[in-house]
Amino acid sequence: MADVKIAAESRTEFGKGAARRTRRAGRVPAVLYGRGTDPVHLSFDTVEFAAVMRENGRNAVLTVTGIGTEQLALTKSVVRDPIKGFIEHVDLVTIKRGEKVTVDVRVVTLGEAAAGTLVFQNEDTLSIEADALNIPEEITVVIDEAEIGTQFLAGEIRLPDGATLLSDPELLVVNVTEAPTEDDMEEEIDAEGAGVEEDAPEDEAAEDSETAGSAEASEGATSDESSDQS
Image 1 (cartoon, rainbow, N blue to C red):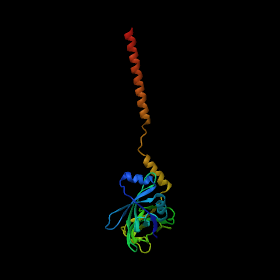
Image 2: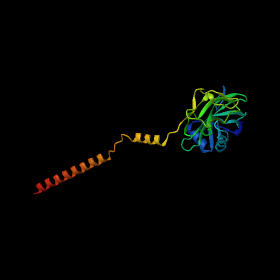
Image 3: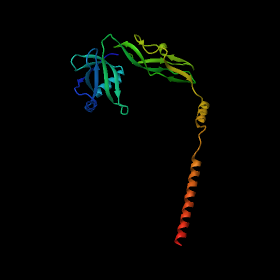
Image 4: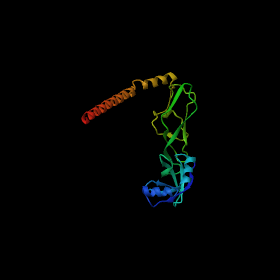
């Protein structure tokens, strides 16, 4: 993964209100963290930064310009709005060329497991150590023709050259199980429906009883009124 140049502007206002104003101005608020230095508050053009994320993934390496000396930085955290999906805030950390960095890399499966199987992917990412300028975009798990009972543990998955696994080697990443049959699914539905009582008839009976009682009370009251008037 090569680094991408992107221009930044310094920010002098902080806090939620300032961040909202920055976003309304079409920019993404960000913070650049360095080793032994104070954090630097920045902002990027929203459209440009979103394009960088689409093209380079979650572990994008950026050469940040426009703030004095160019800074090589790794994208560590991208916070998005949970509903609308726009980028709310970005955290970056300075790195050096040739340096090893710790990153979480997306896991994808490749191929089709054997017939009659069901594939469960238990982990979406694995933590690895890799060269700052050679971070893999994804880690591939080949499941082609995998039989029932096959399990892929983190320590058994082939990593890209130069990468070192940091996650627990015994971590279950992908599990291949037997696919349920139609009979199994029908039995499960029947089991879920077992013991469910239909209360509607009882409710209707109670309503009828209340209605009848109200009618009798009304008739009694009318009879009493007639008796009093007479």
